[in-house]
Image (tube, rainbow, N blue to C red; front, top):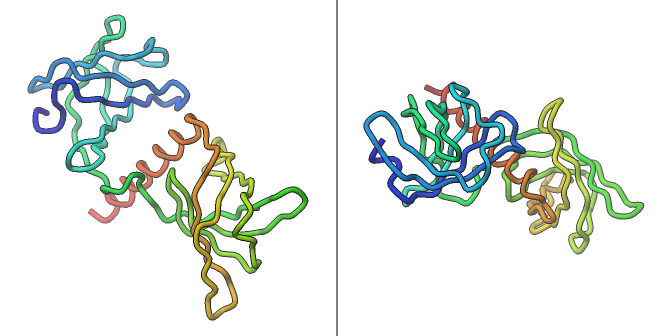
Length: 198
């Protein structure tokens, strides 16, 4: 564990309920795991329940799953993860993601289909010639239980030989809970894809 986390390193911990995400600083590292002091009251943190952890390091985003061995006020003892992964160096992990979405601006709406997504933005394809100057409202359904609502600002539009437009854009007005939901969703899907390849 010593090569993964160090004292004073900032770590984000996400229990099964994304809304109870917390952050803390590593205070002690041992052969069996590490201790961290949380910034906020540890609501939703349950001993022996699997949580997601990630931290920005010199090697990129460190991501792993582990469980809390003990909880004493706002001090957690976390077990060594079975496996870990350094995610892409880019700010947010981007994954392939196909889902029908509707971009709306006042009384204008455009049907589109996503090609990929990250917590920073998404790439879509559509038959509509969309005004790049406008900022659109969009709801993205990640699963039956999870959806994210935000605004979508177009950055680049390319017209293909098939007449369809491929659009890259970024999310704006994305609240912290929705951003965390996207970060964790993309991380999990990325990890699942790597596991399947192996």
